[in-house]
Amino acid sequence: MLAVLAVLIFFMFRNSRKRQAEARDLQSKVQPGAKVMTNFGVFGTILSMDEEENQVLVETTPGTVLTVHRQTVARVVEPADTEDEPVADLESEPEFGERVEQTPADDAPEAKKSDD
Image (cartoon, rainbow, N blue to C red; front, side, top):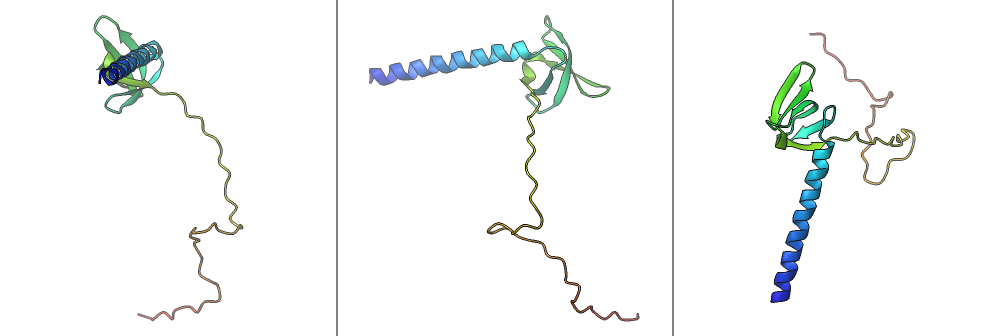
């Protein structure tokens, strides 16, 4: 019973240290010019930081500047690596289960239009 309690306490301390390290890493990345996302999902660029008041000026769109608390900056947004995916050849056979859109055939009979 004591061994289970000791293991539980060990993991609790380990997780708290990991969270503290992540918080220090985030705070080192948060500086003017960094692209960030806030806790409420707003993306923007940091213009300036006030250490005494714990306020950050975040420009969301050109001309729109928000003043937020420093702790609301959730993460620094890194540019995504976009790898070019190969484009499927339209002339190839469809894969199993894939739907293929078909255009109407040219030799299909046309419906007779009325002269209304």
